[in-house]
Image 1 (cartoon, one colour):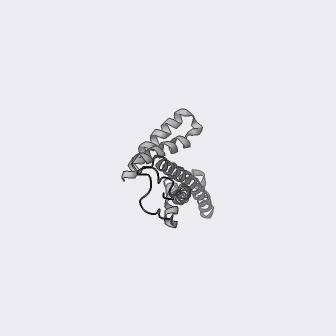
Image 2 (image 1 turned 180 degrees about the vertical axis):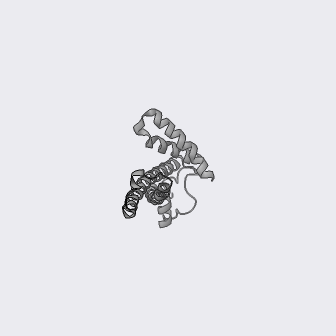
Image 3 (image 1 turned 90 degrees about the vertical axis):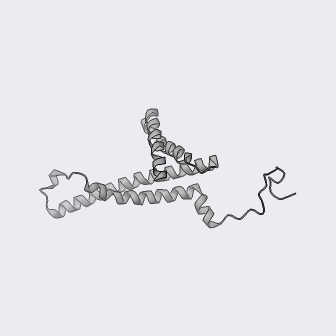
Length: 153
């Protein structure tokens, strides 16, 4: 009959020819590409938050007696350090969450509100894995509870 493997199953063969996979579809449907993109964007976003959060920290009192140039040099090193730390954290969280959500969506073959909840649980549990089972449960609950709020907003 037809060349499609599901041609003999009632309702299993696709209607008409199967459209070829376009470059746009590959970029949107590849979990690896989505994960790398979220990793990069999360890293950039976290790096931009480093100086913002540094501005709200208390200053080191021992630096007050130093010359201005030395204070600025030390502050710029601290800002760069904070930016790297926040960048790494947001990159890991963004990459892990988007990959887990993508795999959940593909495994369930559904795009609904449960995908970010399950993906958030996987992310939270994975990030807290070093803390033991109780930390994994709390991480899962925290991320899965926070994920729908982000999706709705």
